[in-house]
Length: 227
Image (cartoon, rainbow, N blue to C red; front, side):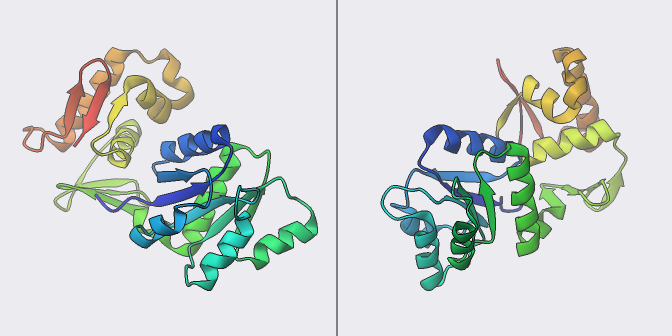
């Protein structure tokens, strides 16, 4: 599988940090959270995140000062500021410090994930995600097509969504409830566990009929893992 897109969040309110982490994880991003700017520079020396979400009101060094400092020492990671500071002069201050976008608190998680996606596209990080590859599988998200060793496989819309969801979470145990939310959406309430199992079996029979790749692993008491 291709390298996942990593996002750093610096937010001193733990409940907001956890909420943002939850919604970004759900979108398939790898997320690392910090409650202050301490240790962030050390983290950036070892990792290369595609995006940073930075609160302005941080203990110690203020968020825009920290971003300005990062820009001065050569980091050009795209930044979205999260802040209650919404005066024009404060917005200007944030952009001048090197911010790429701004979200005023309180904000909706949906708007946040859309802005994150838009900025990742602008920076080029998301173009890598148009095709996902794992073992013999290639999934083309633009054309909604699936290939096994270069040969096209016909999947229903539901099977495509199911495979895409699993390929965003390689080696992670996914509950049937999570799959219902992600794949069936608002219709998921009427889908029982057996229907989820049947859909997974149908998908398995199309992408790995002889079970040579052993993609789907049942996880007792949880659901399934894709590996």
